[in-house]
Length: 393
Picture 1 (spheres, helix red, strand yellow):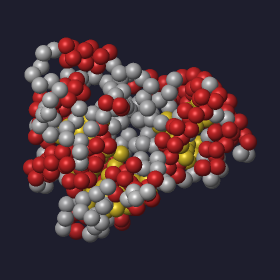
Picture 2 (picture 1 turned 45 degrees about the vertical axis):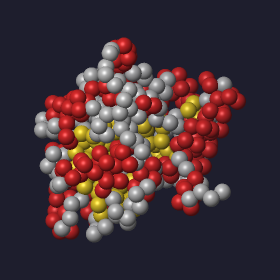
Picture 3 (picture 1 turned 135 degrees about the horizontal axis):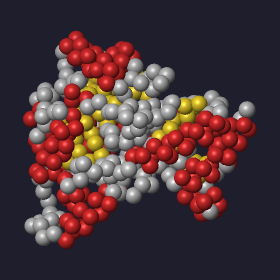
Picture 4 (picture 1 turned 90 degrees about the vertical axis):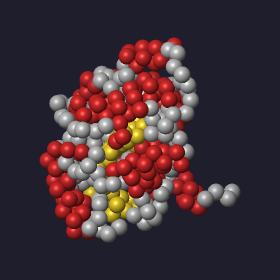
């Protein structure tokens, strides 16, 4: 078959997360859904807020001219204005609708951002561990992903990032709260990163962009706050999704926010709008744009995820597992009790437990648990987790 060599190569390394998810489907058919404990996919099991259902029904019944028609590629002006107003109110900033481009989720947003920014062989610095689709999002536009290790607690190693910067660096991509660790980068961590980027930009005599992937920014626990990068660094861009905030992953709705102080802001926004079109997204979904414009102060009940996190952490700690307690998102990144994370993931499969090896996030020796599942899955899996670690010594 004459498919592209680049795609043929990628097929052999396709998403381990999806592979495990598909394995889970087969296992559930064989053993019964209640006997399989699937922690593979970050697919929210919390229903969207009631307000979402009310507004969706209301909009469906309203008489709106050209309700399902094309709109400006950047999105409806009223939606962009609502998003800007929410950011300003939350973080004390001064964005307007011209700094917002509606997107097909955070994945769509990142593809548009990198299409707009990258020339062939430009490098994007990415802290490890990271969501492995970043490889594709950057490679789609002939960019090069350059990995940099984080510290032991998964906070940013600013010195390591500084050492990786060079003439080819176009951007640094961060993800907070992080997938797979649940780590939220502190205000000090972001401030230190920003100061370093300002210094390095002057030394290299070029703009280095800070891109923040933030689909989990409102899923945080224990009064932790996610710093807004716009307050620290002018050449910054945010990719956001409502997939987790409103439990709408299948609706593919999000936005790109551009720092008003960014260099050549008008030209960048024009590029983002054009790339939204030529990447094939054309525009973010019309109905979802209309709905989220009315739900800027609405989100799922975060305490539901917090309770699941605490239940899972308590059970695994008792069994002898080691991990950093996540501050946000709905993932737990656990140290494998044996060096070979793939081997241990297979051991868990013997107990009908599906998790994703850390190797899938460029961080071998760990495994990821997505705890956005029903309580019974967590409770009933504990015996299998305990048996697996005991059997591995």
